Image 1 (cartoon, rainbow, N blue to C red):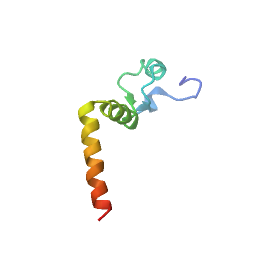
Image 2 (tube, helix red, strand yellow):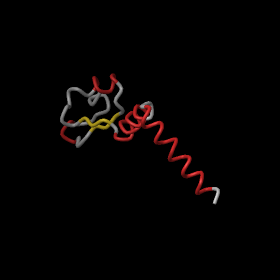
Image 3 (cartoon, rainbow, N blue to C red):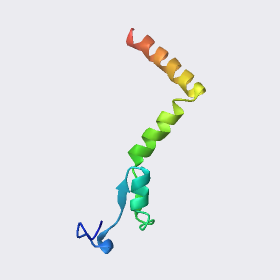
Image 4 (cartoon, rainbow, N blue to C red):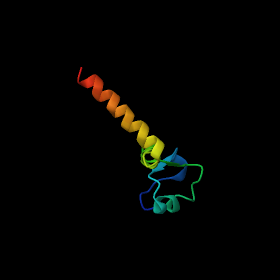
Length: 72
């Protein structure tokens, strides 16, 4: 791919992509340069956390609390 885009490997500082399997595989030849997208990682982590019952309950309680302030 780098040859196709005429990019010299020595010019690279970092390669950032989402964490899709095809992206990880495409850049496995650059393990020191590849960095998964922080935003994508954060989104995945929050989505997973929101499925945990205790987290869901805490979020619901926070929303209820905020609604009380919004109405005052």
